[in-house]
Amino acid sequence: MSYLTLHSPLGELTVFEEDGAIVALDFGRAHAPPGLAPPSTLLREAAAQLQDYFDGTRTAFDLPLAPQGTLFRRQVWDALRRIPPGETRSYIDIAREVGCRSARAIGQANGSNPIPILIPCHRVVAADGSLGGYSGGEGPATKRYLLALEARSRPAAGSGELFLFPPDGGQRRGIPR
Image 1 (cartoon, rainbow, N blue to C red):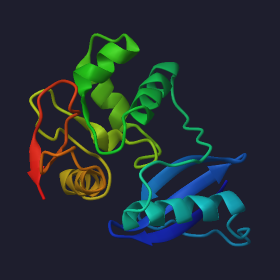
Image 2 (image 1 turned 45 degrees about the vertical axis):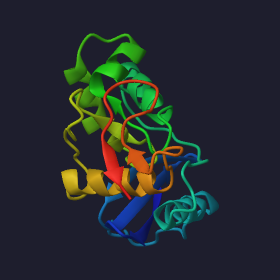
Image 3 (image 1 turned 30 degrees about the horizontal axis):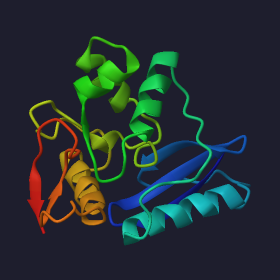
């Protein structure tokens, strides 16, 4: 496994690669063991895409991902990747999508996501529109930052507001510009 640490508005992030795919993203700096190979082309591309994301010029990632987890967790993580940037879904929405009856199980799968940001678990909120939890970085403050970053890049057509919920259903919470 190799990795690369980069600076971001959320502090240092470390991206890990194994067998040609991104397998983890951690908040903080990893400590290099002796004799570590230089960062691969994939790790440099991941860092560049993350910088573009934080700069507001990229809303989606084009990287091979290989998160390790149970079949259920991988199904949940796949569903998270289908949430468009700048939109959110509730835990129960994701549960319905993957054929699960438990929003709590979705929350547990979210909390075990090994590649946050790239697999956007921050886009999942409680059914009442409240933030819910977030295990990365500074917790809810990090989640709020990521949601606001994405909302700024996706204005709601003609409304003057940016919505955390999708315009086509569910409750919506506007964020003034």
